[in-house]
Amino acid sequence: MPAPYPWLSPFWSRLLGMRQRMPHALLLAGPQGVGKLQLARGWAQSLLCEQPRQDGEACGECEGCHWFDAGTHPDFLHLTLLEKETREGEVRMATEISVEQARQAVDFVQLSTYRAGYRLVLIEPAEALNTASANALLKVLEEPPINTVFILVSHQPRQLLPTILSRCHKLEVGLPDMTMLQGWLRQNGLDEKALAWVSGAPLSVLEARDDGELEIRQELLDALSRTKSLDGVALAESWNKQVPARTWHKVSYKWLLDLLSCALGGKAGFNPDYQAALSGLARSANLGNLLDFVRREAESGRWVDHPLNRQMVMESWLIEYGRIFEGGGR
Ligand SMILES: [Zn+2]
Image (tube, rainbow, N blue to C red; front, side, top):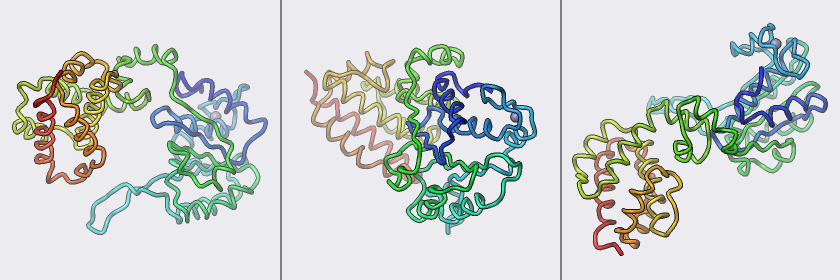
């Protein structure tokens, strides 16, 4: 089984080459949406495969590979964020990997391996370890039992405790170069402009497309481009019903940042496909009002989790947005 995505090939070769000199703990660090988790899983499978090919890749057919694919390999443990129920009975995603989970990993690595090969613990995202869970793991990270490898995946490696970082061999998986992405984007019916929307992270653009975010974005931005005919009350009413809170927050905030960038003589970094509209709007914007608005939005984000107020907050956003173009212009 080759690299999970074409742009990951160089990292894939390095990982396969590590068989000669296995680290106790490997940290895959880099921005979200570049495929670090898929890379980590692919490598884990190659290590658990019972008939790896000569280059070290997993065969995809042995019992180890079948178990891995089914998510039931007894020598593989995946520590990640779990859903939990709040006191109000709501199910939410935890924000931390708990100390109980960490202890489960410590117990797991003390067992003898089931298939007499490697025993692997994948921790993702590693920045979700809190102080207690990180401390619980320190000892086994430092001196893991034989044939045990920890694989940490982190979008925010700076948030990891130095004691954890210092025990890991680090592999940086950065944003891929455009030349490596062109073919893949075309195959998926996407282009460079869609990629700009997610700051260059290829898997994020797939997610945005599949969630319908790209389509909603276009609808919102078409409306925000036409400030002359903007009816804040009607728009807020219809968007409140159709647009998920997080999508609205993302679209409206990135639009403001692009508008500010254009007003300051720069370019539309997130929405290059709306460059002409943004340049036009920037010319008629009151820079003071725009700066104020961006600053307040940067501090807020507060309403995202308050769906009851959504329509009102959206309405007031649209009113303030309209005000940017009052009494401005050069
Ligand atoms: Zn196999």
